[in-house]
Image (cartoon, rainbow, N blue to C red; front, side, top):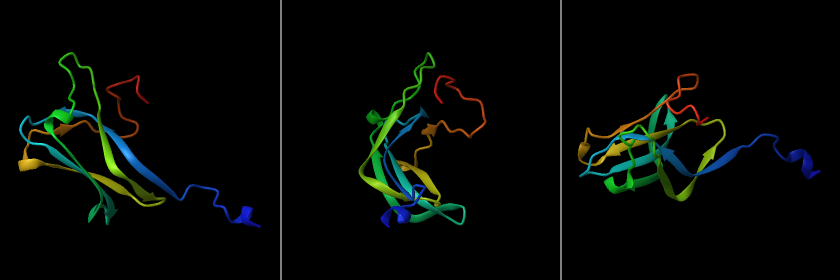
Length: 116
C-alpha cells in the first residue's frame, strides 16, 4: 500500500524569499546574499542560491525607529533537505564595512514585539 510509504514528517522544503532587516547600508556598494549548507559548524563552499542587492534595493530603519524589511527573492527556489543546517552569508561589495543587519536568537528580546 502506497499510504504506508508516505513520510509522516516533511523531508524537504523550498526557499524562495527571505526578509532581512538592515540597520545600516552603504550608498555606493551593494551586497551579495548567499545560502550555503553548513559543514562542521561553518558555511560550506557550495553556494545553493545567490542574490545581489543594489544599495537602492536595501531598506533600513527609519529615523523614527520604524523597521522596514528588505525582501530578498532568489531567482530559483532553493531545495533545503530536512535535518541539514543552512547559513545565510552576506558579502558586501568592495568589502564595505557599512552594512549592518539585525539578528536575533530564540528567547531574546524582540525589538518589534508585534512580530512573532
